[in-house]
Image (cartoon, rainbow, N blue to C red):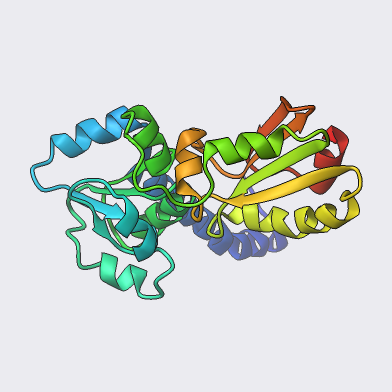
Length: 239
């Protein structure tokens, strides 16, 4: 096949882009292969089959001190030296990561893969799912209790409850418009925002497994709930 000089020059110019695209695809495929998001049972089974599992709790030290998995080490995802400290672990052996609900550990898993760990197991749903699956008894009572929550939600007015955490990215994206809606809707309904880290007992009693969690009550009865991010417009349609 004959190519003109112009076509040949164009192909030469496109060649580096094609090579770069190929490398990006290969890199992404390798990273995807090195990370495995698994459920509680699989996570537990794999930990138990490793004599000295590299188990990382990537929550804050304060969260870790309240509750954590046996044999876990704490390495705060928000620590600016996270990658440097994580790099001291054996990259040729599997490493297991978890957080509160799975958001931070997903980011940590990607970083661990980026710095060369060959196999990273991420616990889906985090320690919330773990505790729920193992029917773990409540720890020390901290913050609001379920009885207080029921009194709040059985008000005559419509009540919208937002269960969130400061570290939760979708929660942070929703915070500004939820805060504004508290003011805009104050005569029509009550919007209560509850930080699960400051009210861990309530979170356990309600079996909160994922964040953010929005629950709408009318006349004391739950009429709608939503897990995960929702836009301001879509939320207002529900109200």
